[in-house]
Image (cartoon, rainbow, N blue to C red; front, side):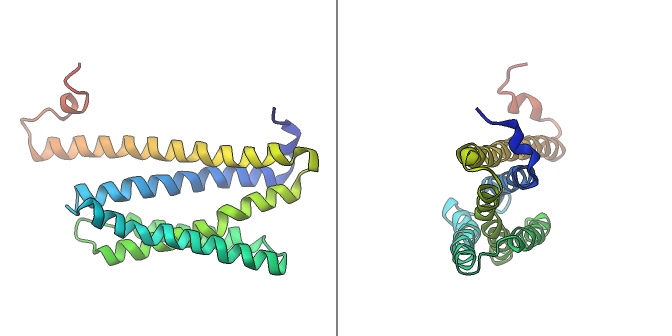
Length: 189
């Protein structure tokens, strides 16, 4: 189904790895940032959604603007570098979010992540499509999308595991007579 010879092309390899990492970051951030805002900070679901919205809006806006710039100039190689840097900086800022962080800080940090992801994600497809033979165009496009999807699955699963372990440990410390493992497993030992 997928010609393995495509992976000899560096654009396909780099786009697959970068797509995996960005899918991991995107879905992990969207899902668990909203949960953090609700569970830890006590925000309503609406408020948590509004705090995550700048990330999603800036991601869409950046994709549109970068797409137009690429159409006009034909230059696309710089955007994954710039976008990855901006998204990484936003993730570093998000890693410092605490129970006392303001929604503005969370929105701005998430906005940087969205801006960076929006600059990178559409460019990965363009790079792959420009690097492979015409006969491999469909397989290359779907492979890039597949790695992004796998990254999002891993991101959600791994961050969910970290969340569960941290929650159990903190609940155990907060309420020593409470068995967090039993509650998380649903009482099934």
